[in-house]
Length: 210
Image 1: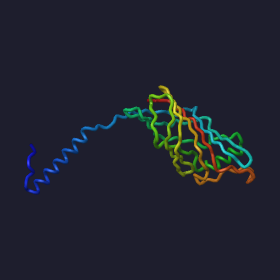
Image 2: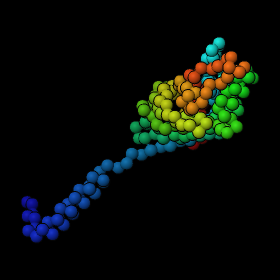
Image 3: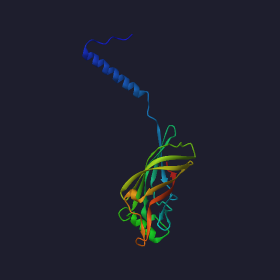
Image 4: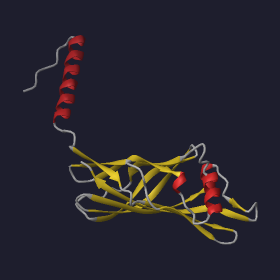
């Protein structure tokens, strides 16, 4: 049996307010927050980055064959083993090698090494979450790439493989010099000019530290 509401208007308002507060508390109590697990991964020196492009006469390839840094990536998994990545990689321009002294100098000059000795790759989110219980998976995610102070977001498709203590991300992304308000490198004055578009391939190897 329900009790009748009091005739006094102030009492009615008070009863309604108390009822709403009780319902709000009840809703909060029945839905606990999901448990999260985090681990830290250090980028291995065996990681690599290769930039490929074309000039008006031939092709060129510039690589960073080793990653002499100790940057870290955080891996967070929820109770369903869905994974998220977060972290920032600082890649130093001076380690680029184009197997051609003049082209190497021109690339470093184009990337304004004196003003911006490193560019950054920041992991933002994953569009699809891989399952940690799988040893190999493909996943799309968003990263922010900052070159010469200009930041642009890209959606990248990774191949992710892992075992107990190691994880490898392999990916490829097309970018343009003009995305970052840069002019392509030049060789021998204006006789040889690089084209705007670049293909960036990376192998990111990580080792667990937690």
